[in-house]
Amino acid sequence: QREITHYGVAAYQYAGDKLNFQIAPFIRYTQTRFTPDPNHGDIIFNGFADAAKLSGLATGVQADASYQLGSAHTLRFGVFVQNEHTKSNVVSNVLPVDCSISADPDCEPAQTSDVPITIVDQSSKTGQLYGAYLQDEWKLTSKLTLNYGARFDIVHAFTHESQLSPRANLVWQATPLTTFHLGYARTFTPPSQELISLRDV
Image (cartoon, rainbow, N blue to C red; front, side):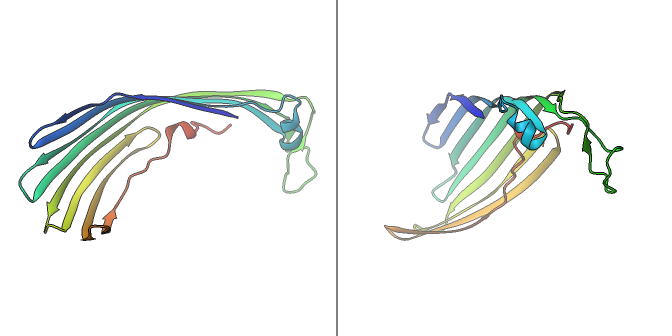
């Protein structure tokens, strides 16, 4: 099995008196290729041998910004957009079986030939991910800071889902060398599109 990933990111950053932001477009290509045993070892031990090539091309942009509202509050916000196109090409050599000639009452399929047949499964899918967040950094004291906000995510691919994820975090700098963190965050983690098959043959 051979796995490769190529990616590129370009970022533009601006720093002002109150406003800071960064915009970063990106591109990523991934590929997983599996080659079965050329001496038919996979078929002998498993009854099938898959030659698989899975690939995905993702493009998108992430933008993050902060704005100083005053001495105690800093507003942070950002957006994320990604479009991904995945392809699956699987050629399976399998041994033919027939359930009707089996002597097993539970109908365990019986192999009918030692000459493999070929099944080809090709599919592709385009999906999108969207996300946006808003957060306030509130300096309660010189040593105590409260971060609170929410993130909203949407996925359009094999499923169409969305989620609002609240989060809160309290940071206390007890000493110059010791900082305590206490927080809660809900995350939205859709499955990787390239790892999902459209059908099961």
